[in-house]
Length: 231
Figure (spheres, rainbow, N blue to C red):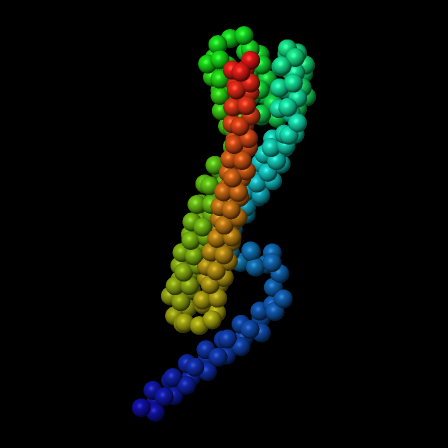
């Protein structure tokens, strides 16, 4: 009984010594870069995905914001020019505006004289092309939102494997054996989730922006066809 208590006491003392040694060696001011490096090679694809996500969100935000900037007076000016039969002036106005709505109306003006159904079809086709341009690369954000957490989960598995390998190799169970694996496990999981959340939010926010532009495009297309039908 005494020998058993002595063995437990010795093991406890060794464990505490290991903790103290690890704490003494640890850097109390671990930088962000050092922390990310603890995640291992899994952090490389996660970092690449984060860069791609930020680039797509910034590029698409600027493009969609620019496409949505259609002056309220645009359609009023187009209506006035068409009512005065100044089609060249209306085409010139559309060319200067350079927005998806303007390109749709420009196509409709070029088809004036043809059956109304053909004009509506040509406007609709241009609208579909413009929406496709606006949605360019947004779907990639949805893919990243699903892949990034999975990569983090792979890092978690690698971290657990490291822990069990260190325990089996040393035959001991202490902080020194589990610290490296825990770093990999926690850092990769957190990084994967953060990148996934950012991509998920970016995907839905940009989709909402596209929906608003599409709504404006449809309204202006209806106004234009109504104008042609009335006159």
